[in-house]
Image 1 (cartoon, rainbow, N blue to C red):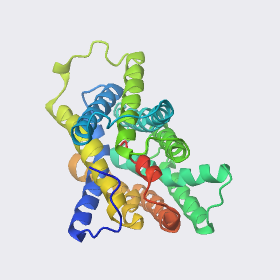
Image 2 (image 1 turned 60 degrees about the horizontal axis):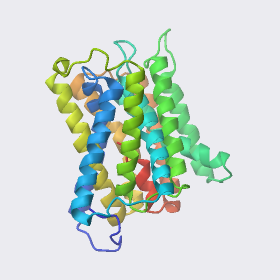
Image 3 (image 1 turned 180 degrees about the vertical axis):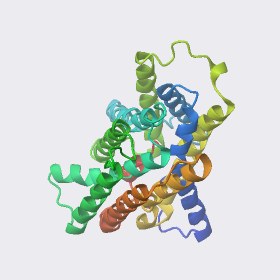
Length: 324
């Protein structure tokens, strides 16, 4: 497990595509995993367990492979990682979990949640523009197209919307938190190793999530015996497949594959999420969902394609997805 390998080192295409498929499928499936987990688990409490467990696994692996000083960081690096973890995990992931855990008729379907979260690259462009950056014209065109798709997805038709408005706004707030965290991660003094940074991000996010769960009274009267086997399995899947395996594959790809290829996760993950939601839990796919989702993915693809030459396989890119 290392992020320092040279991108020039010859790597078999089969390994690259295996890692890429892992990122596509595992990260795309986390939205469905969240929906199944919150069927009988406290939403924010389960998210806290997910990230604390994943942090423990990563920390143990790093300690065994690199020795006693593997997780050593200075105070400033720790503070930066903690802030990013709160934004990405407590804000970004926590709000998605809440949106997917609402009662029937209010909960956001997992596939639509993924489509709404897909607006993150668009929001990051907005943040860059506000802070003085000058993205390319085609980038702005992609942002416009993507936000048009967002409007199409949540626009009420015949008196009611395909997506519950409160739930949709919750996911958009989550995407905003994620975008701010992703944007700041490249501007703060973070731990040099993305795996080490992720350990502290997950710990900080888990601490805030459990605090919020207690504040909301999620654990009042809760008993593990009330949790179904499928929810426990979904939680373990999210912890290991989503937060450990897929992230490791992603960081490995950053060192061994062109960033233009790795970046395709941004518009493949939502497609995978929508397909899994429809196939496994019969989430409805209406014409409005297809149209809005297709426009969002097209906008994101345009932004990613236009901006890929400005990206580098470094810390900022890795942080952008470390929580999935």
